Length: 128
Image 1 (spheres, rainbow, N blue to C red):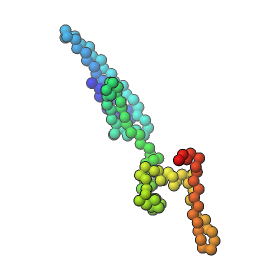
Image 2: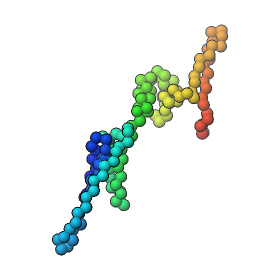
Image 3: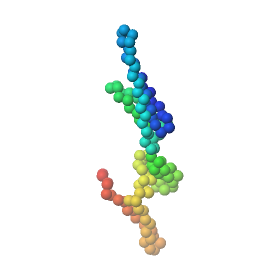
Image 4: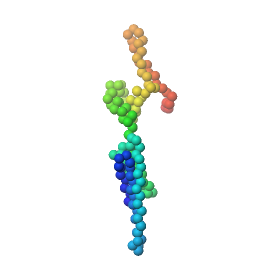
């Protein structure tokens, strides 16, 4: 039997194996091993399972405080994102794009009470 549990910032694996012989003799092996969780691990959502080839797999999601902060900022700043309207892609990082140093919108005064929006977008890593 294998059991995993979380204590503080550690995940603990406990395993026990018992081999019984037909003559009544047996031997038992026990294992207890602890592992430190990564810094931003979400221990409340830890999952463990044994694969068909008897390998223990432990999965724990990693929170990304910076990405979560940017997501909050995008949610709070709907006016800035409203320009994309119904065509917003749910997987595109609008906040990262708009707030990144490579995206620089500038309103330029062209005189005669006319203004023009100029956009500068870095294309260094662009792949169509």
